[in-house]
Image (cartoon, rainbow, N blue to C red; front, side):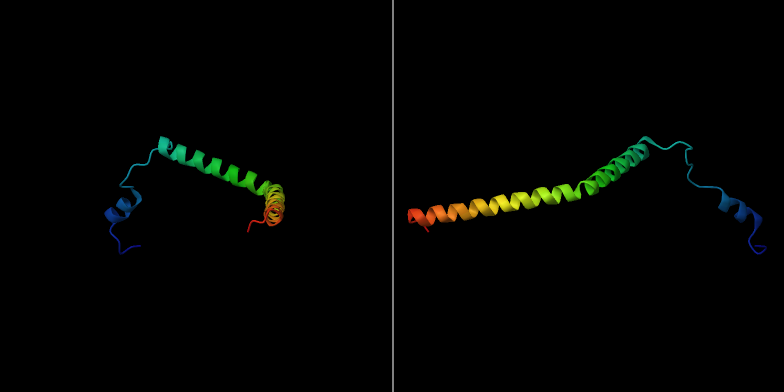
Length: 79
């Protein structure tokens, strides 16, 4: 880069914003929140089959209860 003056090349290496070597408290909190979210997602994915089975059982119970209610209403003369 011979066409760029030396003073400009030096300036480009110097950051205009000082970055602290240690992360700020806000950054630490954000990183920890991300870790918690990743952990929760992993646990959720691991339990996905169990949750789906439980949901299916609940759907069946609701369907059976709905069917029983309709039979009861029809026997009682309701609509």
